[in-house]
Amino acid sequence: MATEQQPSDADADSDGPHADAPDVYHDLLDRYRRVSYLNDAGMLLSWDQQVMMPKGGTPARSKQQSALSSVQHEKLTADAVGDLLDDLDGADLTAQQSAVVREVRREYEREAAVPGDLVERISEETSNALPVWEQAREESEWEQFAPQVETLLDLKRQYAEHIDPDADPYAVLFADYEPCLDLEVADRVLTRLREELVPVIDAIADSDVTLAEDAFDDEYDPDTQETVAREALDALGYPADHGRLDRSTHPFSTGTQFDARVTTRFDPQNPVDALSSTIHEFGHATYTLGLRRDEYGTPLGDHRGLSVHESQSRLWENHVGRSAAWWEQFLPTFAEQFPSAADLSPRDAYEAANQVYDDNLIRVEADELTYHMHIVLRYEIEQDLVHGDLDVDEVPQAWDDKMEEYLGIQPETDAEGCLQDIHWSHGSFGYFPTYSLGSVMAAQLYAAAEDDIDDLDGKVRDGNFEPLHDWLTENVHRHGARYETNDLMEEATGEAFTADYFLDYVREKYGALYDL
Image (cartoon, rainbow, N blue to C red; front, side, top):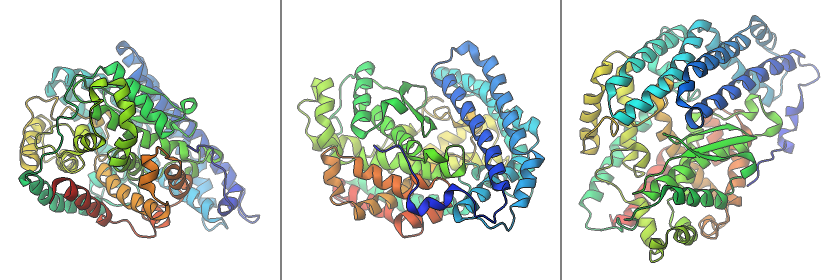
């Protein structure tokens, strides 16, 4: 796995401005780097709170995070930054420098519109909300967490109002995670997935085909599962000197191109879940590690947004980790740790990893098809919450009703329903659509990689992941935020962003599995 990124010939113009460009470009970049470094420090504190910090540390950690966010906000929104951006209007800049200024300006204008005390309050409240969510989830009581959701909703509505009082507040919040595709694009994609996946799901339910659903019907020790997860990361090329694997309540990845960490969780009855979530978070980490090191702290060394980030995690999780080729090469490793799997065939493992559930309540454990019904459910509930059309105390019932409508099942507990995801404790209203956008992008990117890499399936079967790493680094990672989302997809695949590849992939794969 290649992690050391150097400028290519095409990137040579990134080393400095043209001779006639104002020197203020360098001043702007120096200021922005400091803001970026503070943000990364905050991410590390957040990782520690979710992974290592004792529960009693929350009061101090919330103050630390609040102080960091305040300083970060002050530095980014300083008058000097605005003056530098004004000075660069119309300056003779290279294409990459213009992209940097575009991204800095986008962040500056959004941050400058929001009062510093509101930024500080949001940071403190999200840090305080995390342990409340964890306890509420453990005890399966939405009522414990509801006051924090109400507080964060109010704060995020104020945040959106400051940024654009004339816009849909949910669209403003969505732009924090996907700044380049507007909410109408997300809505079109989600609508299309709902309309075109439901008939496939229904056809699967009516199919007479029986997959090897009980292939992993056993008890799997969590510590041994962790060993398997580490072996999977080694096989995929995750560098131990630039990352680490830990356990957390909700799997996640965070870090920089020098230090990208992943977490997962283990269910004794479902080893495929932990393996899939580990590979998913590896996808995030490999994107982060593939960003240019020489541009650390600048938009050229930062990711393009959460939709693209999710495309990388969903690509590795689904197109690699759920493939028949993956199980042909990895099943022997799995069976070494769990001898009960010694008699499994790769086909059995592949079928078990790709069964479409008719009773799955948990998003991160869902199959590739019903997964998107989970996203639609959250998308609709979030919009109703942000718009004030749904009261916080009504969320459990609304959740249950939509689960019945979209998935034909209802959770028996809040932990299986509205408390299962961590996102609202972070105040991350607007995040969920990026999961479906990322899945769609993943299929388009993987199809392009298959066109460019000779016998990619065979390479996965042989455990040779370097060609795919290199392709993704060359076509996605190394660009950072130089291109906006649709432009990046065109650069990487030769086509504008489209859901066609994902839907074709779904019909081909599941048509073959279920003889549709």
